[in-house]
Length: 161
Image 1 (cartoon, rainbow, N blue to C red):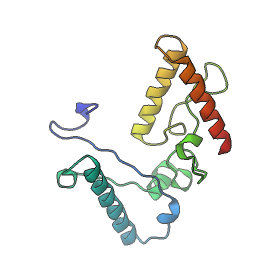
Image 2 (tube, rainbow, N blue to C red; image 1 turned 90 degrees about the vertical axis):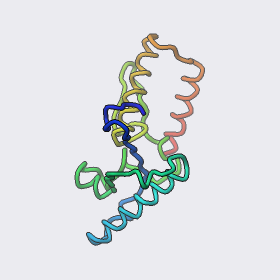
Image 3 (spheres, rainbow, N blue to C red; image 1 turned 45 degrees about the vertical axis):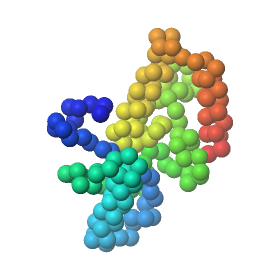
């Protein structure tokens, strides 16, 4: 539990997501849309139970399901994307910008940087960026060999996207 204050005592919040395309949700009637959201949510809960949260389905007291249609309607996201506009190429998250830019002392943070959109992802982006800034200021330790190697690897991979 990262922050026990976000849920009542003895309860927890689980935030899970999976990427999807708007085409899967576009032409559904209101009833088909509702049923498909429930089906996908049930499948995700079943997978979480099987992987590491046994008994999750019986313990859930509230669930909210978002889809690409949700992101289009409430977040004005192009085709309901989760993060930057995806290229549908296999590199996935590696095609997203990271915290560093080509300009010294200019950093990026938010839902259009790695790891993407959503409360958890944006919070992680902020955490990662804060660490990057502190490391660049020599306030936190860093591994120069690893930093340079990983930055070069990610820069090369981004060129492929």
